[in-house]
Length: 605
Image (cartoon, rainbow, N blue to C red; front, side):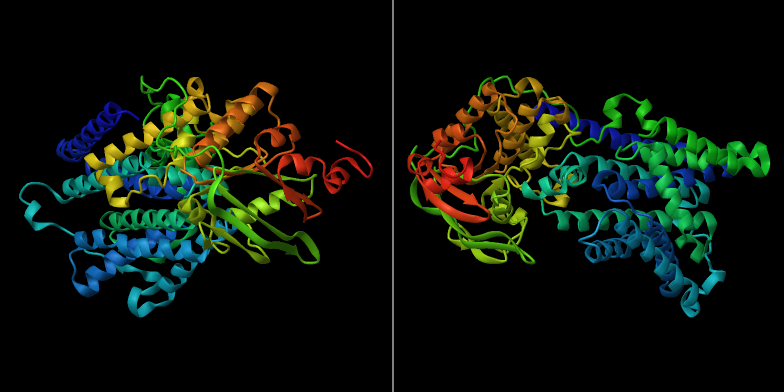
């Protein structure tokens, strides 16, 4: 991303801000009837609720059937604090973000290890618990009858505008600012981390994204916006009841997102407008209007599975992890060392930077790996060989933190890291690729690598919203790193292409670039040459030698014996989960147990 692109994005954001303020000021002033104003208010509240759910459902990739929990909680919080504590209602609306945020974080922590239908059930359960509390705590909430709310006027605005006018202005302003805030977050490492988790949670973890923490933060933000939406509906309905916590509002939020376009920023706004207006337009058909509305929804979802936003240009429909496909810097024309390089000696040197000792993994009575030990020095390529089922991938998974060893130890730069999760190992300088090609398939080549520079220049939530000069400088530096890595693996001409559209060999090279983007000192490559043609294999061999010259320590798992013999300094051979030998390629090649494992008894290579 060039400085010009970042500056252009910032100017566009200021234009968005001015436009939002103008709409919030002008629309109420044009003398709309209370009926039309009420529909616009409902659409804006629905848009805020849809944006809230879209953070989880669209960008994070987790289905929530319980967003009514946040909606109803915000409504009750604003009403109760106003009625019982005398807090100004509009101030209470702002404060309602706090309980929503706390509930979102609580749900996130309580459901850290689950996903799919289980997560959806967990959110639905939270909403039902709150509904039962609201219905049965009669002394506080007045139970099923609900609490009447007096119209929350603002006396200092009364001489200038009617209640309906400034209420409409406030709702439009809040919804617009929420839209702009999410837009900014999506152009930051925080927003890109959400997309990464949605696309591949294992790959996200392997590039240093703390997926559990990011998930909790996303749910907390979603809960805050959902609660504000619930609080803002109260001046329209002037009563808060347990009905606000029922599945009806959860279903409404889900349908708004699906109808407009899941994973798009404008989608929930479109869906909300339709949900607010279309039932009223269909009043002419009487009691059948909801049936007709339902049929129209089914037709739209069937014909446009990506939502109505798919009718827009593709740039609007795509998840905006970056503002656009970015122009490449003119000075990046060939593979370069770049900031990820750490030039060192061509021969292995110094003490071990990575070591495993007595590494063992048991699954019940099955021993997948038994008592494996080896070490790795700076600038060394260590080959991990063995027939299928020898335990190589299990060893790599344990070395990278994805599988916890039954016994044994793993050390990185002299520190025991056996119990650390993958993202912590990445922060310490270890990266890996996977046996099965793992990339963010629905993102461009550029965006794949941009996500992986997450830890290069850490950024806070506040900085992502403010996007100061320092933030823009950091983004430009991240982009420079990305372009150098794109050139490094020879994908400059494919930078704007979707990763899933690449040839298989190019995808393997992209997966290596993703790992290199984390600035590793130790790199674990699991069968990077699998499926490559001779030209692509030669390109990979050249890349490995360049990385070795920079002092990166590499563990290479590969079935291409010729490549292993030519690029590796040492080889470790596994068979049936046990280590049978270790040494330089020439010695390993003639080892009788290696020949037996690969070619059978009495055979020679």
